Image (cartoon, rainbow over the protein chains, first blue to last red):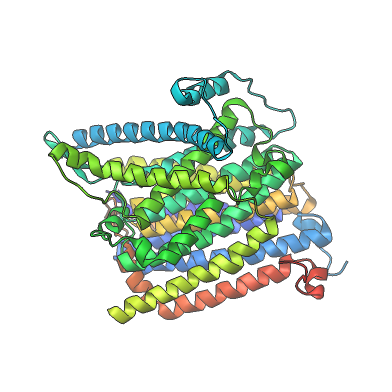
Amino acid sequence: MIPLFYYLLLSGILFVCGVLGFLIKRNIITIFMSIELMLNGVNLSFVAFAAQWHALSGQVFVFFVMVVAAAEAAVGLAIIIAVYRTRETLNVDRVNLLKL
Amino acid sequence: MSITTFVIISIIKSVAVLGVLLTAVAYSVWLERKVSAHIQNRWGPTRVGPFGLLQPVADGVKFIFKEDLTQPHVYKPIFIAAPIIALVFAITSISVIPFGNWVDIGPWGTYLQITDLNIGLLVVLGITSMGVYGVALAGWSSNNKYSLLGGLRASAQMVSYEVSLGLSLVGVLIITGSLSLRDIVDAQRHLHWNIFLQPVAFFIYLISAYAETNRTPFDLPEAESELVAGYHTEYSAMKFAMFFMAEYANMVTVACLATLLFFGGWLGPVFGPPILQMILPVLWFCLKVFFFMFLYIWVRWTLPRFRYDQLMAFGWKVLLPLAVANIVVTALIVAWRA
Amino acid sequence: MFHLILFLFFGAICVAGAVNLLVQSHPINSALSLIAVMASLAAEYLLLGAEFVAAVQVIVYAGAIMVLFVITIMLLNAGKEERTKGSRVAILIGVPGVLIGGVLVAWTLLYRSNTQAVPIGALKGDPHDIARLLFHDFLLPFEVTSVLILIAIMGAVVLASRPEAVARGPRKDAE
């Protein structure tokens, strides 16, 4: 028996790490990975709250989050490839022109 | 059952299964060399032991004593980690594979399976999907164009065929209504093997499994004639042996899965005294797995390699729609009968 | 006790992986630590009893999404990231702000929520029950996500293919 609070704290730490990575990383792929980290943190709190309220819908929602994350990853990485093709850089600070 | 006996029985089972798996891996290499030789009208290994039966030992000794090269241009941490990742995930997936019925040994009884999970099939799929990293990272960290191409091809191929592999199993799951491998086998009693109910799914599974394990005709990641040796070009000695073992362990897992899902697992005629009744199911299981291993080798030395675009087009444009159609038809029939 | 040890073990891997993602400058190292985070999160889900979610986490997140990331890193041959002026500003303003926010969240969780203690496998996420919810109560969202996936696939194909290839149309010589 451990308090559910521990799980929530872990999910909070993961989320904060994700936000931090989103802010301080300059590589567009790493920034994208930080977003995935945030989603993972949120998923953990979904599962934890599902256990608290004895509602399986919390777990089903994680499933939906994963589906959206998969779609997002596919489109996002395609955008990254397209950006790299025109700018030849992955640094977000160098992608600062609307038109080449 | 007390926790101590549980732990002891689990450890015994794990060690036994691991030992059998590694022996099977070693001897499938021997089998491959022998069968390929006979297909090409040669003799194959004959010198070490009777029929070359000690050849795996000789191979192992050779792998251990070879110089372990780490080229200066590789990215070292990942270069070393990649074969370990490949081997670990290849071996782990055997832990949920059941290979026999309930047995009683003295006062204790146990299922012949390391652990029975009710998401067993998903666990196997998950672990095999993690195996991609070994190949991809090996290709990337070698810092070599052939390796990189091999790694890219391998990961793209494995990700693509994983989809049709997973979808081909859905038909079986609809019929059985369970993800536990033991339940799936139990549902196939009285010769109601899934191969008769789901022939299309079986062939999709078989083809996708060949692509998943990077075997001919889908062995593009290591195509010798175009990529030197693909992702393991830079590997030598024990690191190379780990990739080799991982490939064969994956083949064993896939063969086990095919047996369990489509060929009734350990089911078969059981008769005689209790001790024989205990051994026979395991024997049937091993025979069926052996058949699939043999089929692997047979196919390898019969079919030529695909071209890469053919491979991708086949996976996405033929197997995937076929698997989806199979699911729809199965679901309709099940719903109509219910 | 056993529960706590397991939780702490996998939680430590999670946090270490998340911090490593921030510290590493090479994207492939960040990707690998993110995979470690996802795999140990699957273990945490198992501790909470969500076995189906744990399996899907490994198959979809660790086995499919992260493979896409690794392939992209390999394909673009992404090297070490360079530091620029913008990153310094982000660190100076972002890090304190985020830390304040994190402390606030932790404080709220600590004092404002009445969470109970849970045993191992608190809520068993049996595939049967999940399937009943998914295909019965959440049928419409499920179908909508399938449309979303379809759109995402088409978008990814259009975005990632070369512009001249799109203009030329499908290759005639391809079999």
